[in-house]
Amino acid sequence: MTTRDTCDRLHSQLVRARGRCERCGTADGLQCAHIVRRRYGLTRHRLDNAWALCPACHLTVDTDAAEHRRLVARTIGLAAWAELQATARRTDRRPDFGAALEGLREIRRAMEEAGGP
Image (cartoon, rainbow, N blue to C red; front, side):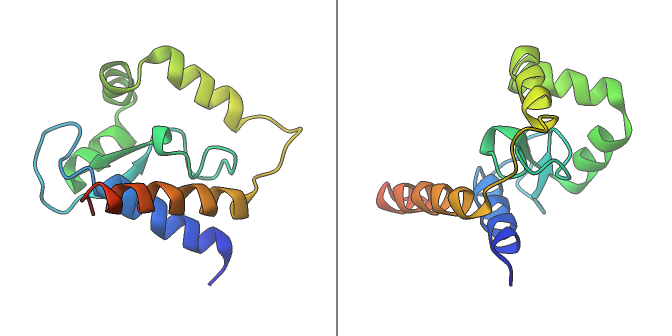
């Protein structure tokens, strides 16, 4: 497994550990849904670039741009979304998956120490 794959798995686990769909509130079948598409390496593993969504809500925000924007506005805000988009499109830096993995592991350790997942 590559470092990027390990980051993907841990990132998804941390996002799903939020415990509820951030759109409808259900706890069933949570998925990690990227706010700015995951193809952009610089924002791929940022926890502020993902929602925990049930499958139905994930499909809705992936296929309905207006609903995606509404959820952005309600959760992270339009200014934070613009910052994520700007970071994602930078061409002067490449993603450092090793650093991302270490950061995600530190967050997981802190959650475990606090009694979380």
